[in-house]
Image (cartoon, rainbow, N blue to C red; front, side, top):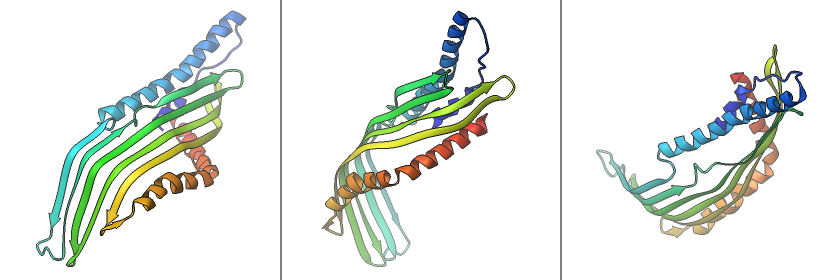
Length: 226
């Protein structure tokens, strides 16, 4: 979302000048508008890396807690060999501002995000009842895309105005290879079906509402910056 803050930089004005000068001015206007957006995306990507989120690696972490009366509640858990990659790999497939139509066209994509877990387990006692679970495996999210366009007018007096937008969110797919057991029962099929089928189907069936929400949120955010 951070990349869209660059919309607030739209304040260049198009005026009547000689033809060759106008061409140079138009090129400069386009770079002036798309440049900050590209910079914003690069900054977002770098901030994800600087925060240690791409790649994210956890060799092992343990956690435990016990109440003074252990039979009421206590637990112990661990995770190991956690690896996440691809979150900062934000691709700009298209970024173009047309000074003729006053529209900005964009196409951003996360090609592939991978999350793998070597092993994780938890065991707890709740009012003397023992509960346990184990999980491991891999999750791959493919082609998260945000494609759209926005109509922008620029004036010397009125400044920059964003009138409307058209945004489309798509998900290429989810590959799930997770092994999950709870209380000794295998739930691997259910969890894999949830990630690889249920989530994409829900997103697809509600694509119109999701896109509408994204349009409202993005336009409101941009207008507040102007």
